[in-house]
Length: 329
Ligand SMILES: Nc1ncnc2c1ncn2[C@@H]1O[C@H](COP(=O)(O)OP(=O)(O)O)[C@@H](O)[C@H]1O
Ligand SMILES: [Mg+2]
Ligand SMILES: [Zn+2]
Image 1: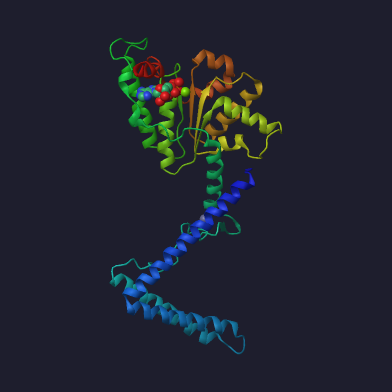
Image 2: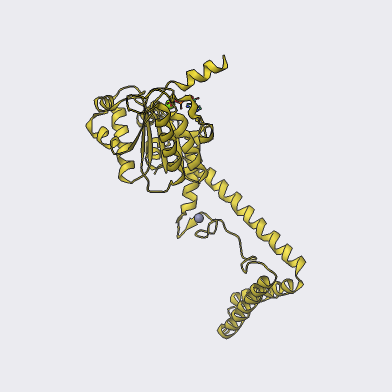
């Protein structure tokens, strides 16, 4: 998948920083142990000298070295075992003096079996989604700030229960959704008028999922579709593939669906995103002010039938933004 080279450079820099940090940790451990435990210090000096002998033997190609090589290797392993035993005796894990790696697959080199390691590609992906999210308030909302008293608790809505009851249910579904998040996972469709908390709750989910270390992309449909169109028709300044990223991120929050300009191109981009993500069971949260008929009319049966498979949360009540503004006046 296409990523701008600047994201590879960012990932490379991050790998370097990780390597450096781990080398420092290992060095600190070595000097800590050396200064506290002379017996281990002596053993590790001995290990150093057998390693040097081994190295010299391998470089010296005269004569038959195999017997001597075996002997030195045994010696080396014996000392390593002694060091481990001694570490345990002093209350440390036996691998305390081993090299420290954040990724055991590539030993923090970023390359595993001659290919870019998974950890490296995660970093590239993260750098690219950070850029997409740069202008969005991803971590600004939380469940804790979601106040149910904004929703009326006296008059039943057309659904037969009060807005408060409906929103209590929505809040609990969203909390559970965030708590149980894993891949593959189900999707949500949040539907209702402006100002009822759709963006607030979807951002609250997004920030929890981000904390769990997943990649999350949040944005409004008008922004994303403009971006995708610009990239597709070649007058974009970078070669990031937004469509591809929206399809592949762990969680996508597609906000304000229906607020974008009505175009065939946008609808086909929307179909690609929704269909590809559903096919690979990647979760999407879709927010819209449209009702079912409006969705069907605007996007057609193919998109509608896919959105209809998502768990739907209907939002109820009065515009909270307006209530908040009135309360400060
Ligand atoms: N239940 C709530 N408690 C506190 N603030 C809320 C609540 N619902 C919405 N808001 C705030 O009101 C404003 C509008 O809500 P928003 O989530 O953008 O609505 P929507 O996306 O449904 O149009 C935002 O500033 C949001 O943080
Ligand atoms: Mg909104
Ligand atoms: Zn790795």
